[in-house]
Image (cartoon, rainbow, N blue to C red; front, top):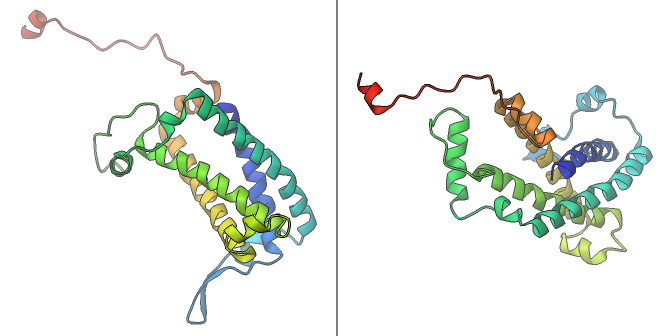
Length: 221
């Protein structure tokens, strides 16, 4: 699971970067009400800062190449979770949505006690399951955009070419938000937790003094 996690990070980063280059060729999406545009995805400064020029062919080449790595890595991860039984720890439960709110309050330091958890807390169960669904959605809508004639059925299921492109774009924005929240959570969890995600084990300081415990008789004194 760690291998697929770390493979997915650079692959998805390249996919988002190359997707931005492709989108730059026709950046039509914006938030417009009553003929007035309040926000445009993305302003000119965004492309200038990231040095995203008119390199449509380059963006498409990277995007269509790394989408196979993205798909293959996702299939391996999904098969492993099914075969190993890890899906039981990932899928949200009935109480997960209620407990996820308590986890959020705890992370915001509004609530002192965090709800009990096993390997993943309720918020992680929801987030990690959602990201799998998002990955599947990106793959399906991506195929509909890539080959709308050859995959006409998939394109139809997505509501047509334009609808597939909108969904694909929204999912990409979702990945960016997930990245930001994920990185913030990693920072809050601390270095030892991050090292455990990389190495697969935690480092425990044996020289750290144990908490003092007293017998009932000594405690009375």
